[in-house]
Image 1 (cartoon, rainbow, N blue to C red):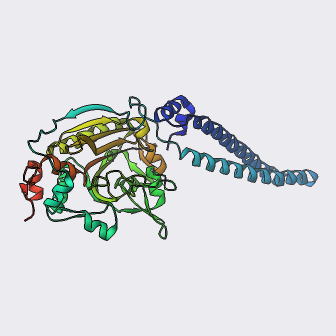
Image 2 (image 1 turned 60 degrees about the vertical axis):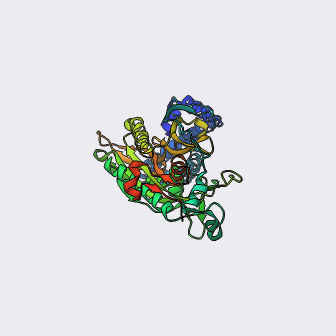
Image 3 (image 1 turned 30 degrees about the vertical axis):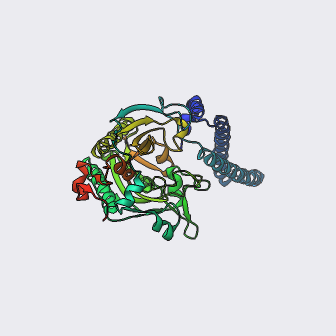
Length: 420
């Protein structure tokens, strides 16, 4: 969540952020008024409490009528203290509830606007010119006996699938290659839980009460994650880390689950938009002063692995209105999908500054030995969707698919051949 001191010291910064996101900036004034009322109530409570303590000492020394008068005042004070404390608690709860609804302050330089207002920062590679009519990834997957949507739907419903044979080998190889790259870069490999408590989901920045993308198990009050970012963000919740240990870098491997609510009719063919997929997610805890540099580091990690799968891609600076709750800045890498004639998201990396760590109470001891909130960042290093880009960009006229050279040791094949 946002820092209330920043709100008080520079409310115009939050107003500008809200405008950039296309959100209501009047919430800034509501927060300021509620914060002022809360602080006033706390001050009143503390003053009355101090008077109550002082009164207690006076009563013990007084006698006769003076003592009776002081006792009457002490009784009156007790009621006032209780009422002031209750008011302060109510206002604190109201402020906390309201501030939880405010998204992170957008980083300076991020484009303003919504989903279509991104800025292309760089384009890497040229789309391949085919001398035959390219097949889409599902047709290729069926020729290779690698993707089975029909039986996925039979077993689990629409937007579920089986990866089999070379399809399973391709995903495992891709994720293992990504994890190996992360390990070599100093990341700690993690196999994370896919079910988390509501406070972990909310602490990461997901609105559990209203987010229709999230699967919930009501009998257990647990949520299925859409990314291992959630579990990794909660890993150090309510801890004070040693500042000398920063940065802490983790690479989480998990299955991910999204309801895809509101996507009726979108990407119904194949495995681009599905309810379950696997992903390697980078997650880092860093000193706030190092967050921007860490963001570039994660983007460079994504560049490196996209180079290994030899797919044309572009990097976009996501507009403020499409950042999501926690991100202050987000860069996406979008891979070229030949049969769609457009770029589709393959990776995303976000700088969440101290937003998540405030909600989850993750701090570190700084050089002055004071507890300070860390910055958190995340970034995709590989996911099931990449199979779409690999199959389509590396297909041959006979339906075979050339495995990118860097990926071959992990898949164990140079070429994926159509099933007999």
